[in-house]
Length: 162
Image 1: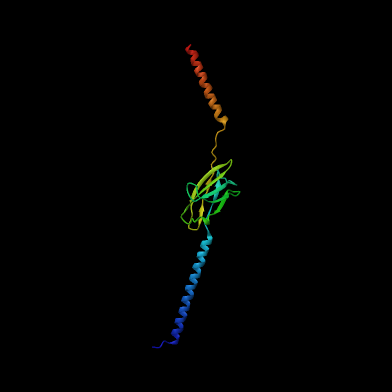
Image 2 (image 1 turned 30 degrees about the horizontal axis):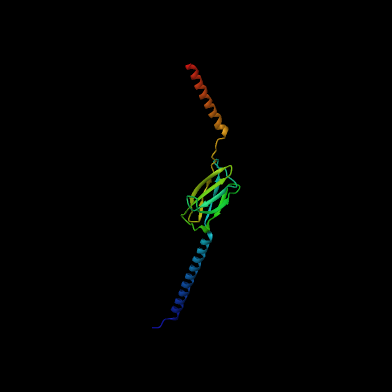
């Protein structure tokens, strides 16, 4: 049985097209894998105070664990309180949780957590809350007044009994 020349040419063209399409597919997949690997994993957000104002120069730490023992990145917040940390080397990826702390002397500290998205980003806003400890005079004066009042009351009662 002889095959006609026209059919052989068509079959060869079809094979060439198929091989070309498969080759391009392999090249595209390799390129996309390289791009995805190069994309990295980043944590970004803003450090703000209790009035929602950005806190500049706050120390920001990113942790892999909730107990803040495995530090995977450190940075300082910008003038507007924003920050960004590249944690590509941490081994974390989509769906993992990161824990962020921020602190600044004379302002306070705070922490929060976020989940890394499928795009390799975790947006974690940290609110720094200053815990005000009352000054000594604020506590001492009312306590002194209470003690003196108690002494006057006891002294007045003692005199009445005599």
